[in-house]
Structures are given as structure tokens and as C-alpha cells.
Image (cartoon, rainbow, N blue to C red; front, side):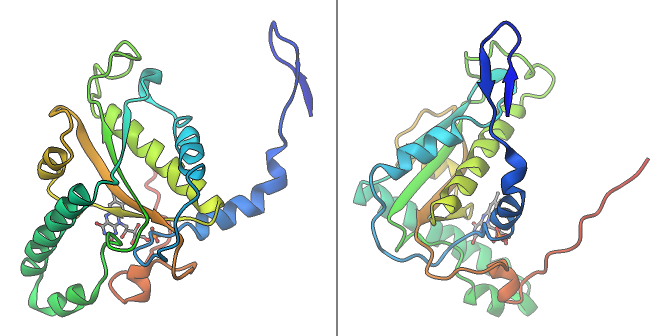
Length: 219
Ligand SMILES: Cc1cc2nc3c(=O)[nH]c(=O)nc-3n(C[C@H](O)[C@H](O)[C@H](O)COP(=O)(O)O)c2cc1C
């Protein structure tokens, strides 16, 4: 479709309804992945995915997300140790009726995923001149979550899975990665080719929880 932008030349706009069904499939099949194949990812792929994530909406156009690729074996080992400690604590906190089931869950793909990416937010970036954050400072973190979700969908489009690991002590991870103290950890994600593809969340397949229909409150 050709349209004229205000004060600009005619532009060809993409027609999005052509992939409405494919988009719905992408959403349905996105999945949080914890079982990865060890195949490497083409080094050109991740920068392209991060460029797309960088187009996510952000408060005041502040782009407060900070991406950290974690490749050094000692840093990965440190994060893995933090996960192991936090997961042991979480297991100990389970009710007796849940603890066996919790112990059986695989809650991170840290050992097999070829790519480890830590996502942080700068809570007070210069970019954006503070617009929108006076009343809701948490919107910097929300913006970084938007970027992470964009990355998640973009990865799925090229056959890659992403697994979000939050069973971590954020302060310890930040210290292990030697990052600025004011950065807020949003998530530590594993990226790689999924060993299993499914349209059903793993927690549902394992009988831990079930997705519920959408609930809307009306006033
Ligand atoms: C903020 C956030 C944190 C999460 N943390 C973990 C985690 O630490 N370990 C894990 O296995 N899954 C984690 N997940 C994935 C959820 O368990 C998963 O999204 C949910 O079960 C629905 O499954 P689906 O993403 O495949 O649809 C996290 C997801 C989000 C959005």
C-alpha cells in the first residue's frame, strides 16, 4: 500500500494483515524454553535480534535496556552457582505437597544453551530527559521488559527458543558480571535451539499450573 507521509515522500507501507494468522501462531508457540540443543547460533543472528529488541517501546524514548552477553566460562559458572543456591532455597520453601513436583521441574537451561544474555535496566537514563518517569519511575524497568519480550518473539521467528531465569539473586549476578550498581536486573535469559517444540507451556505439561482464560474487570 502506498501512502504519503506528512511533509514527506510517498512510502510503501507493509500490509500486516497478511500475516495475522502467522502472528497468532508465533504468540501461541513462543514458549519459555529450558531444554536446548547445544548447536551454536550463527554469530550474525544475535545482533540482528538485539537490533529488533532495540525497537521496543520505551518511556520517553529512553531505551533504558542494557544487554550483556555472558560468554566467559568463569562468569557463566558464577551465575550457575547462584542459580543452584537460589533454586535450593526455593525448593526448601515449597509446601510438602509441592516439593517433590518442584524438584522434578527443570527451571533453567544454563548448561546447554549456547547463548547467555543478561538484561538490565538503567533506572535513570539521560536519554528521554525523564519524560514519563516522574510519576512512574518503574516505567524504565517496564520498557526493558518490552525489549526482552520483543527479543523473545524475534528469536522464535528464526527458530530459536528463549528461557527466562529469575531464580537468581540479582545483586549477586550484577556483582558476578561486574556491572554498574545502579543497573536493575530484569532477567537472565538462555537462548538456543529448542530440544522440544510445543504449543503448551512446560509448567502445564508437567502438571504444575494451567493457563486460564483471559479475565477482564469492568467498571
Ligand atoms: C518474568 C518471568 C520470569 C520467569 N522466570 C522463570 C524461571 O526462573 N525459570 C523458569 O523455568 N521459567 C521462568 N519463566 C517462564 C514461565 O514459567 C513461563 O513463561 C510460563 O510457565 C508460561 O509458559 P510459556 O512462556 O512457555 O508460555 C519466567 C517468565 C517470566 C515472564
